[in-house]
Length: 318
Image (cartoon, rainbow, N blue to C red; front, side, top):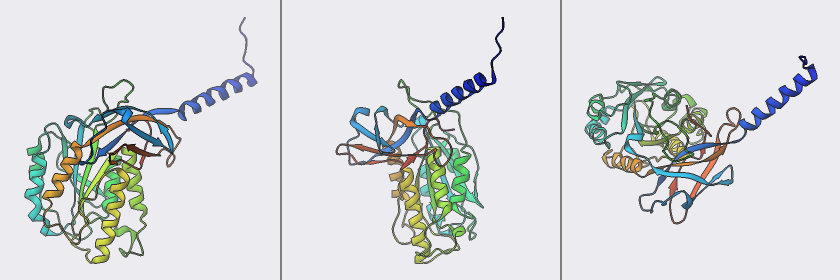
């Protein structure tokens, strides 16, 4: 005899299934973040030597491994509106790309009118990537806003299909370790005046959140734009670059006045930073929808200076 389910039982089953799905959605999921160890510090030997606080609650680390060259992607993003004086840096930039550690995937792209134009996808052929470097267009405002370009790029990150994660038990399968080096003046012309009285930009905030969701560590080297100059513009751009690099676990490598005499020492520091970066694996609570999909994280270790993103997205990163 077949028993028919009453509407009340059907509703009960639906509610139970919904609650179970909700509980699973709100549960803890394996999560990874890039953590840089200061060059003057001794790297923690293993996960037990570190502490991570997720939304102010301590969580144990399940894995702690250095980023291998074959597990890293580097995007060199150049503002296409830079002054023509950046031509003196082309040899330094080519040398930087050619001397990346074997196995590192690199992409050279130019920030134009709100998006990034790349001559080739991510490649381990560093000589080929270096050959695509050329003088920027040098027209005022060619990037539109470097932060619109950045958001568009990280949201549509060109994948190679390789894995970010380690082979440790419990580690989640994610993308390769992602690094961006921006060469730009950092000014956001879409936010209006570049004065010290107008420093809150929603486009910078959006780029920060987009980069955090994509698991990207952003580094920057300031260089002047063809159409925007003056102390206010310099200060505004530097402030924004410091904001976005710090929030994603990177560094604003040049914070001086005007253009750097040479980008070579900063390019070298960036290469060292990649070699000093580790993948930390831990559990984080899975939220519902943006902006709740980001959680606060803070890493600490005894007698060690660490640099990490201020927020991460729990679970696998698409």
